[in-house]
Image (cartoon, rainbow, N blue to C red):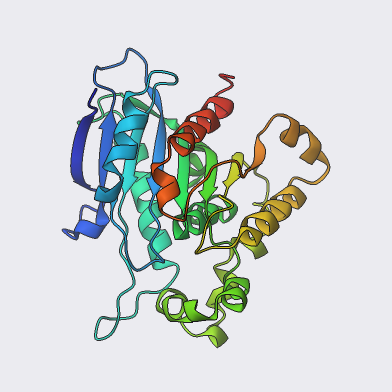
Length: 282
């Protein structure tokens, strides 16, 4: 089966930049009730990657019948080398927030026409995309209150959560980190690391899964483990309950290298399971 795909939808009305567009994938036939929406944020070290690379995954999610859903795959502006102007954090994040705000406001207009529920958004971010979706929920200033509360779940996949530690482990990554965050002494490395972010004041965290393959050759598993431990502390005394309910979960049974894992059937199914848990469908 093939999903109904609507490509290159501009989420910034004042921009014609293809990096500020998204693709929307809907089930082959119109559903009678609005569906949960998976929002995929690609990786690529904040300097590469494109939504078009994930058409196969989006089509699978939008056409599988275990748990019907709609899917949006977003682009965001990337950091580039000189002579381009510096493009640092939080600019990538601002684009992701704009895309989510657009998806919320356009849920009942064409081409969506009520196909998805803007109060049931699930963010799935890979690599640097995991840093971006983490910031969106741990720092609610990027989204208005309604949009923030509409995010029911977050998944970080092979994610970067602690930039300073990443550089200690992988010194050769300094090049792209400086492209994305500026110089180390500028304060952006730690400020942009979810590992150091407190829980949002007065707001309960959504379901949160941290997914990491033991075969990842580009980001070490310690990033995932340390961040998962941090998330446990953010839940305080209620952590045991959310762990038992799998509303906070560390998933390391997927296999494959950093990018190859995204093509594995197991990973695709884990994303479906994640949303089913979020919707109480398991």
